[in-house]
Amino acid sequence: MRKRLKKISVFQTSKVAAVLYGLLGLVFAPIFLLVGMFAPGASDEAGLLGLGAGVAGAVIVPILYAVFGFIGTAIACVLYNILAGFTGGIEFELEDVSTY
Image 1: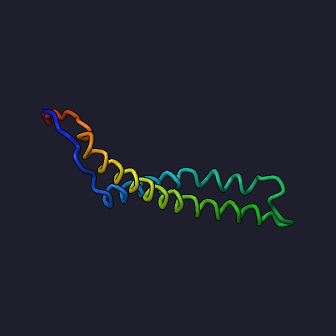
Image 2: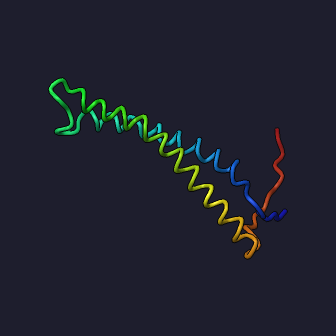
C-alpha cells in the first residue's frame, strides 16, 4: 500500500532527534575524558586541569549535540513541510506483517 508523507510534526520530531543526538554525545563523552587526561600541555602540576577540560567537554558535548540536533531537525522539518507542498512529499510503501 502506497502512502505519502505530507507533513512532519516539527516539535515532536525535533524532540526525538534531540534525545538521539544527546545519546550520541554521551557515546563521545569518554573520548573527551581521555583526550583531556592525555592532551600534551593541557595539565597543570597536579594533572587536574587536563582532566577538568575533559570533564567539561564530556558534559558540554552531549548538551550541545542535543541542542543543535533539535535546531537542525526543526529547520529540516520546516523546510520539508514547505517543499512537500510543492513537490507532493515523499512516497513510500507499507506492508502488513503477520505476527507469530
